[in-house]
Length: 226
Image 1 (cartoon, rainbow, N blue to C red):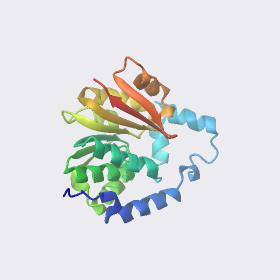
Image 2: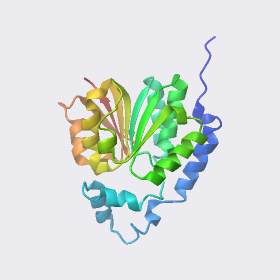
Image 3: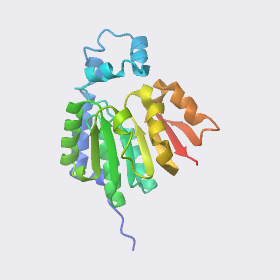
Image 4: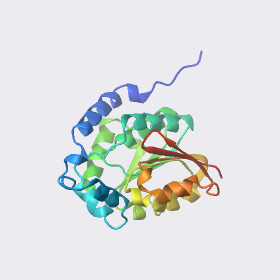
């Protein structure tokens, strides 16, 4: 008889922790931030797409979770399990909700390592506390600082899965840093990728070496073909 590996997302300590963190995120929308109180939709889009203003924007949002959705969190777990991921890179830790899902998959896959990077020190500290509470801190290395520097070296030889969920305008730049390490069949999940049309055009190009499709309303899912 085959013994099934239980899903860590459905058991303590992760299940109640994730429920609490998502509930807290629902109650703390970035729309409540004074940084956005009087900003038009057009200006918000410009800020999200800017390579010049992203530092100021994310500094003003340092007290807000900015998590993936519940559905995207479950998707991350499913994808990491399905490819037997052992090596994951995440751009944009925030409070660690997505990191917890990915780490749960690594735990259930038998182990591995996540390198994740966060610009804001206070968010990195909160993420570390959440990872410790979830019992998965041993699987995660948080690199504090600008990802263009923190992911420029010290990467694993091969990468199985990438989550892009930091400053949207940098998605292409981050992919440049990681691309040579992506194994054939590696998956890239880009949250809110529509804010980076250059990235979308790149991974959807027939000559790019990727097959890429939109998934739900807010995710671009790509696979490295060669």
